[in-house]
Length: 239
Image (tube, rainbow, N blue to C red):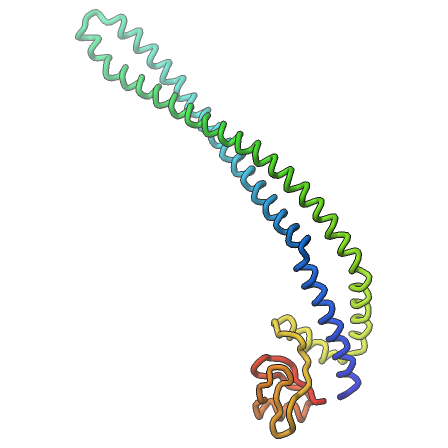
């Protein structure tokens, strides 16, 4: 094994330790509680926003229907005067269909306005409950966030130490080795990414998944000292 590869393996070991810290952070009970509180807060806020938007729409509808109501009422009052001025029953009978139609339209407007007012009242009641819930969730969020920040402060020195060591090692590692490592990581190859070859020259295999390397991979391993396992995609190196 070359000194360069040894340095790369030290870098990989630190990277695995850092990733473990990230997993521990994401699995921390307070992190999960914080995520749940954030999700709940956003849900409640979305409901409040939706209720507000619906109330605005309903208010606009009430205004439109009320305008229709006033116009209809004015028309009805005028027609009732004409009805009262009619000289006989035959003339009055001609007004009846229109009078009934206008009265029916007024009733429809009243019903529409009443239904929309009732809906606004329900939205308002729901909003009051949502505001209380949002306050409670926000308090829980702030409390949990503070605890999680305390945890982050506890592990921060160790994290910074690892990151510093990785940076220093990264400056010493061959660029190609480091780039292949970064590329494999970005493609989701499981760690460890650089693994020692297993078996002898006649039966080289990946040191982690155990699958025998293809003839092409064996040739590359012998000539370049590194090849990629065709099964798990890890980078296999000669010891």
